[in-house]
Length: 217
Ligand code: MG
Ligand code: ZN
Image (cartoon, rainbow, N blue to C red; front, side):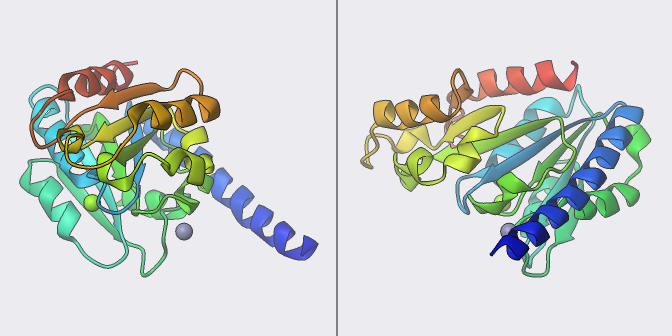
């Protein structure tokens, strides 16, 4: 038992060292980086598409897409006009700092102002692996249910912003916003939260404002 804990701690501290290296690379290139995490189907790629559409004229944006097997999400980001790099994790259920480090080596960082990392869809281990990004964002969505902060506290505790996607579905699925927000508030008091719909566009402006503020900070 103790031995297993030691092994895990060793892996995480090695990861943290590379994450610090990634942060230094971002900072030296004047890049602000955002780590987007969520369960599968919460709308990470849709939010990235909408964000690219609204930011591209003014900010040079690149996407690093983590996926277990396919290029579908990176292709969507590229189709929306961003520089897109795909990381196939080969079955691994999260991105780690080494994967980001090797992606950065394939990119011409001089031309980039913002990097959005789309993590692997998973509400557990992405929270444990620092990538070196400046801000972590969690995307929740209405169909997932209002109990997720209670079930996945680690994910809600460590993030800098929370997007609540698919609010257009509120009339159709049971979701108690008050109960959900109470769970979030216990874990991460005062967390900046953006209820929105990538489908209707409602609420997207405040999210874009937040990205812009932190992209230029
Ligand atoms: Mg996706
Ligand atoms: Zn994992």
